[in-house]
Amino acid sequence: MLKTAQNAQRNKIVVLNPKGGCGKSTLATNIAACYAERGSPPAIMDYDPQGSTMAWLERRPKDRPAIHGIAAYKRNMQATRSWQLRVPTDTLNLIIDSPAGINHDSLRELTRDASSILVPVLPSTMDIHAASRCIADLLLVAKVDRRDRKLAVVANRTRSNTKSFRRLMRFLDSLGIPIIAVLRDSQNFVHSAEMGIGLHEMQPSKVKPDLEQLDRIVAWLDGWQTRRRAPAKVAQLGSSNSGIQPGILGKPQFGSA
Ligand SMILES: Nc1ncnc2c1ncn2[C@@H]1O[C@H](COP(=O)(O)OP(=O)(O)OP(=O)(O)O)[C@@H](O)[C@H]1O
Ligand SMILES: [Mg+2]
Image 1 (cartoon, rainbow, N blue to C red):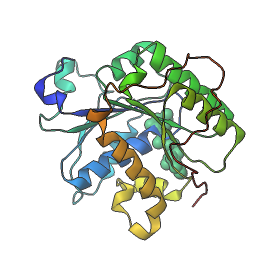
Image 2 (tube, rainbow, N blue to C red):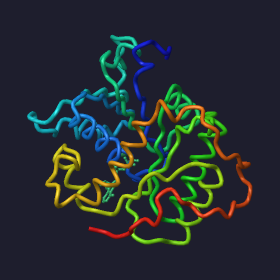
Image 3 (cartoon, protein in one colour):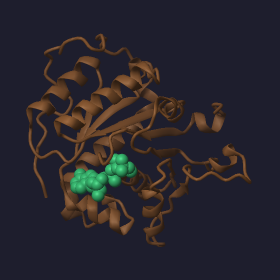
């Protein structure tokens, strides 16, 4: 896709992790709902044949702020691909929800021109291994340059400060990749998904700790133009842990609701 004047102003946000069920669609829909509440209608592009994001959008109450949906997983032989994937010209935030199990070609295609890439990670050892592989692929296969600071991790459904989670934090820290938020395991996410809304559209007293974390994510996303090409700490992929204690979130609060 060519960078036009229009999409040079657009934050292309890709939510990606080939591991199934780690919270990609949950994150993508909540980010979209948040931008919609703010006033400028975002677009959400669903590459997953399960179509969970499109289904969420269909459940969305009509009186809620608009989100433009693009079912990228559907192929229409009657139209060109670029026509199918067209985004309204005034869209400032485009959120891409990706499927589980994507191959290297899809990884390259999805992340091309991305200005922000979010990798949600669950706290289990298997998930953390998968996330490490995913990040290695983003750096080595999709050639995401760490100096562009477009890549960040969101720890999802985090119940406890486990050894494997701390290992992931050290691994990311040695690569200069931030964990920008820690989302707790909360039924709020399940309920918002069922209702076609985001947590920002739920009763504030119920979702306060979750909103604080979502706001961190959106604040990081909003900084996309200033994040570019800043010097990052350089460590060799595969080198041993740096031993640097992660300081991005201070001491995250763990818990469930
Ligand atoms: N923080 C959370 N707390 C509680 N439940 C959550 C949380 N995040 C996600 N879930 C639930 O976990 C399930 C999987 O989440 P989701 O569909 O967002 O993952 P996914 O990565 O998009 O999955 P897939 O790879 O199949 O597309 C859903 O039922 C969702 O409601
Ligand atoms: Mg999904």
